[in-house]
Length: 104
Image (cartoon, rainbow, N blue to C red; front, side, top):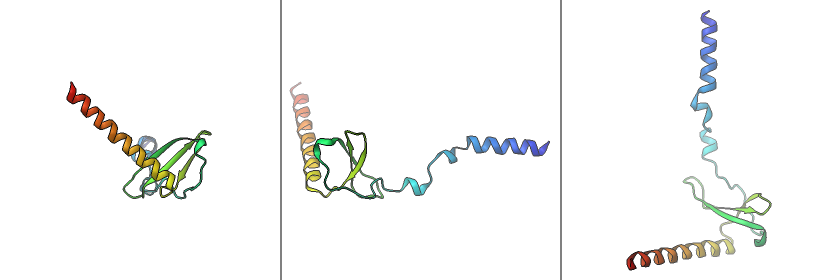
């Protein structure tokens, strides 16, 4: 009877152990982009995502209209211009928001 109880207890621990549900450290610390593409036609890009993680360099992921995701070289000229434009738009939006708050 003790063997059956030990077996059931071990089975319950395996099924409900939260540590087994988590990803191993080696997978968590991996960079999403291992290789990048330089030339992607801009008309097939649906959106761009920027990912920054502590262990990986600056990463840019393009979601294509076919729902495929590819990593884009963040050093390419068009990506740098895109990021600069996004930053400038956010600065303008913040300035407009501040001026609206001051006028109210």
